[in-house]
Length: 446
Image (cartoon, rainbow, N blue to C red):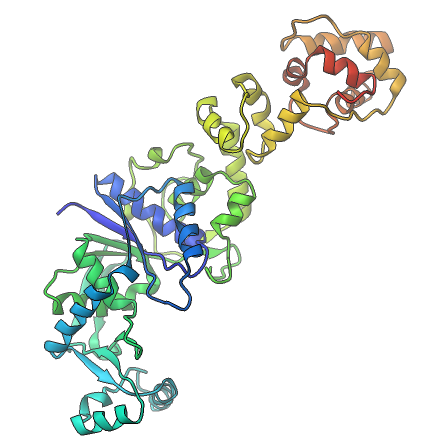
């Protein structure tokens, strides 16, 4: 069997960095082992799943570079889940229950008060056919639970190691809602069987689900995949992330000008023993990838760390890597000289647009001392200009005016760029050119 993994988001909200981490680690695991990466949209929740969120998931995945080898939607496989449910019913593993949510909550409280685990008491198994007919005549539609077999469920988790759960501590999971639609567990198992998923890499909030799912796999005559449960990502304050609340969404990070490889560079190493370093290309994260490097400690995502990593990524980015990124922003006509001039001062890639404007488009100069800047304009040397032009020009202005230090450089920078700070003028001045520089020093928009 070819190694195959899946990322299975529900289109009920925007992907956040916690979702992205699971997607990325699945993708890297697949590519490190020559396997396949499947995008599975868990969209059986008809009330909360929307086409808009589904489109946003695909957009975010492409932005990160996590191209899938296959994509399926659970809403298109309902007949397959119904078939599996009928098999479980025929095997006496799926049984109807008629309790209302309020009745189930009351049962849970009574068990807790009695010092018992809050698991379902299987009262529905004692109902006679006549009692079932009576309940249905009253308008109660059954939900269907999977009957767990007694004994211990064990698996060797790639992150958590040896995992064991006693079935007596688990409730029989509901697989079919009262309206006939399947809940998470049944479609997930059926899809993993049909797609020949070899490894399930997901958050540790699914650990308990795994114990029940392993029995569902067996009841359907299939071997379960290998499981790996990673600690859930939190924000810097240790709070959990939520798609519904829009916590640290990828869409917001993109709008803030964060490069996708800054996100990938951080998420790929967060919680592992590998150092976090900026990486410009996704494929560079594949060599050496190993789930065994990830600890069971809770990783925290700090936006300040991401911003710092984003800046480091840009500062070391080659022109070959920067050019396609700039083109996506609509910045064409730039050259390597411009990129190498401005990149040391960039916090986000979009800021390159501002410096392109300063170098190539009309700018209103800021004049502190018009007499001084006009005198400096008369000292501009003829072109061609290069990196040696600015030091020579500044020295000639110094000799002519007697100014030095901030009194010399600050008014010249303001007049030439309109900015208090930025890239070195020795690299900017040749990009601005003599005509613009002369006009700006004279106080003209140029």
